[in-house]
Amino acid sequence: MGLGEADKSKEDASGGLAQKMATMDIQDPMYPPKRAATYVPPHLRGRVNGTTNLHETCDVRNTLSTMRSSSWNITSSDGSYGSRKSRYGGDFLGLRGSGDQGAWWDGKHIIGTRSQRLERELFGSHHDSNAINAGINFDKYDDIPVEVSGKDVPEPISVFTSPPLDSHLLSNIELANYKNPTPVQKHSISIVIQDRDLMACAQTGSGKTGGFLFPILSKMFQIGPRDPPISSGYTSYIRNRKAYPMALILAPTRELVNQIHEESRKFSYRSWVKPCVIYGGTDIGSQLRQIERGCDMLTATPGRLVDLIERGRISLSNIKYLVLDEADRMLDMGFEPQIRRIVEGEDMPDVDHRQTLMFSATFPRDIQILARDFLKDYVFLSVGRVGSTSENITQKIEYVEDMDKKSVLLDILHSMPRGGLTLIFVETKRMADTLSDFLLSSNFPATSIHGDRTQREREKALEMFRGGRTPIMVATAVAARGLDIPNVTHVINYDLPTDIDDYVHRIGRTGRAGNTGISTAFFNRGNRSIVRDLLELLKEANQEIPSFLENILRENNTYNSRNNTNSVRGRRRGTGTRDYRKVSNGSNNYSEYSNGNNYGPISGGYSNGGYGNGYSSQSYGNPSGVASQSWW
Image (tube, rainbow, N blue to C red; front, side, top):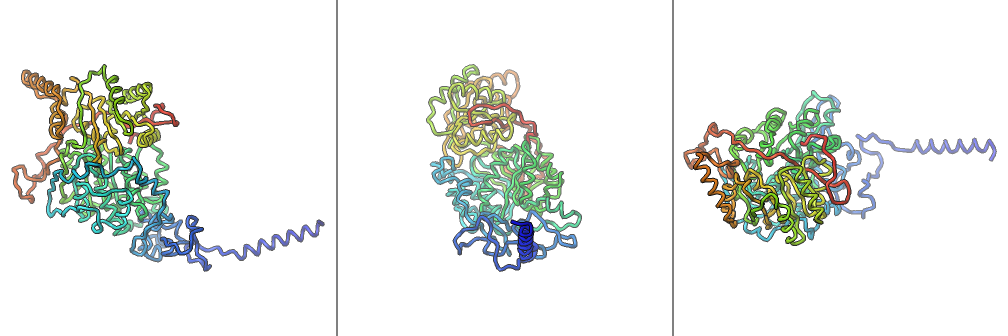
């Protein structure tokens, strides 16, 4: 090819490129496209024509990457927020670009498309052994006594129906294979749907999480997102990076908030609601990126939430629903200053402009006093013997000296049938690792969790325990509260706690949702301080009472009478069964309340310890590594 031909070829190529560039239609993303063709999102390409989904409801070509839910704001040219229509050219709030994510459009809830992959992740299969089912003793829940006090208490529901629940929520409940509401759900759903504040006590494993998630999500599905408060004091950059959740759920531990978050993901599936979770002990950057993508329902530990509020990344000014789960545990762990700052010291709406719910397995007097500050005209709900245990749990107390515990433990494990999960509780982190290593050396697949393990190791350990790859887990005391692990058939108290409430919450990891379970406790004279409460608890649950417990109780009484002392007692259990707003003289007139000044907090606490341990590989064992970040 000659030089002239080469120059001519270059001119033709450049001319052709210029012609192509001239014909390209580059549109401003904030104006309607000029071309007749409509954008088809990647996840919808290749589908058969005529398939109906939320993207056919409206043209979302120019909004998928910029428009978000109620958690985000778009600033108008004059610096103000403006109305929904002024921002979006229509009532366009909550629309997202993911096919399985729903939207809020023109005052209507647009349901996202189904995703088999996500449904398997969230709900498992109907044959999944790890899925909670209706349990062989579920019908016995109807015989559990329920105490409800308050003004104009709504009637409980008996089945999951619409109304009062939203029809889309019912479809998610069906996917989760939930057949019947538990007693706490029967009452709490009707109470919350009627916009009443609630303080609820229920035996562990009774469905408290669904008791607040179901009615809150149902109401959010029906009323849609809220506009953030109008303010001209922030720049658009800060405003676009700050989350404005509509619902806030506070819980004491990262394991519990993760568990609640997974449930909120499950029941908000295909809706406009975007759930998020934040907690300490892990990378804050990933959590910031998560809330930047949208945050309508936030589950958080108090410490990390305060941190992100101080960073200006979360505002509570849009909160409509506040939930305090395991409230007594949060106070026992010293979170009251953070909780009061979050509820009373930030920009959260006051008690008259939000709905507040408190849930826990126990509600001692100090928690009920706290309720006076956070709740308004609330309904008090007590389901079952609060501070007691479920009759679905068979409790066995064995007299075992400390030196014999390991050999007795091996005998128990050898005699157990395969297929279930075993949770063993000890008092110290060191013992958790020591006992786990001992079990591994004895050919039992085991792991341990406690506070010296990183968050990643903890999550891996819990994942492998749930899945049955390591069916034995040794845990310290903090793991007893809130964890909902299906198919735990046996709980062993290798070390008994000194507080009866701790014992209740530990053994409550089995016998959940109507299923049966076994609890075994190793007892000796070193545990004499708990013997009286333990005896009362066994009697209330109609359990077999070993004679050595009564003998040791008599020894305690004899010693105390000789020395004019009272036996050492943990915090009295069952203090949450009574509504302390009622007058102390026993009047049945509910309009009369005591002023609460005669309460006084009740001391009590929990042993140190925490979560931890997991796997750095696929093998069994206890990897090294100490968490360098804040526990919370």
